[in-house]
Length: 398
Image (cartoon, rainbow, N blue to C red):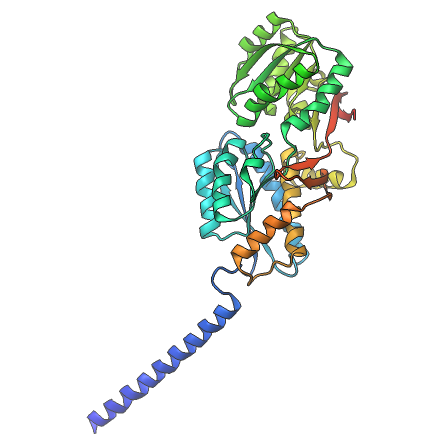
């Protein structure tokens, strides 16, 4: 009897195990139907390559803040077509190798739909080949090296006007106002974009305007003492000075120029056209400086004004232009997701390709920076604002 009971018990247990296995297989099959391999998760996962630590942390945190404002506003309204958006940030510390590591993690492990960033031109140059090979869009809001977009087709995009196009109008306005004949250039040679601006962009523009470049003085991001460079500039006695730098170093240079009695007007790179420069350097020191940009905090345009007010209310500081560029890049991406009908459950590779095709066709998108159109080289075509520092603020010249 005992043997017979044991046999029946084993048979019943086997039946139960078989039923459980069958149920598990049915559930697995159903899950496969709902979320096939390579499909989007039940949320829109957006990656970002931003320097949260390191020498550019202050600017990376500006971009992080702008992205958080956008994500929270979208999710508060129910997401995109009822699907929430999740932002996944990888801290690059402005290191090219860390940017590559982050890109690979976001692509393969986090399975993001797209990537915002990287931050610097040096990082973009090593990350763009990676994203092109993987077939995923990467949109930078801070790289503007001429030719970078053209050689990084088709998945890389620059939500920035390239430097050569950006600086020509400011130079024309500077020449018209001050009529300089001889100018010196001082630039950050460590930051790749600024190095290009100081050596390959501004000099030809000045030469075309009939201005002689009498000296070129490099410095490094993080430098504190600029007395040697300024003393050399003073010995050259230029009619004007081109300054290409982040606000901390640039403000110190401006103060040193005035300290040594140099009164020549300053023509700046895009970062000079920002309230942060005025705050650090001082209103009187900035007076008369000219620069061009795509966004400034005193803009009367409704979208720009609303973005600035929201940013200031939440973070207690004004947004830098790179906060506006990444914000618009993110909002364009969200609009494309909606317009293209990209949904969870769709094939991830196909959805990434759809976004690339959508970004390639962006035309006259109205954001906080005004109108944005993407050119055939992947770089944005934007309205350029030429600004004059006057009375502690920037006003538009043209």
